[in-house]
Length: 50
Image (cartoon, rainbow, N blue to C red; front, side, top):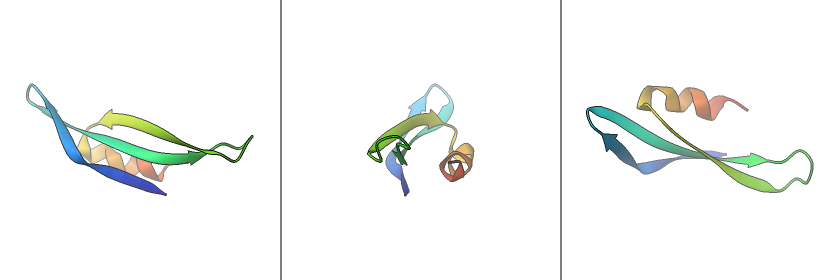
């Protein structure tokens, strides 16, 4: 399960997007959130990785 944040961040002339996905810990089974700021074109690729 993953979701994109609604707001996009802008710094100078670059457009950046903050993506957040839920990651399940193999040890405990608990969910944590992984966050990353990247170019909008890379978001789908990052969310599809496990």
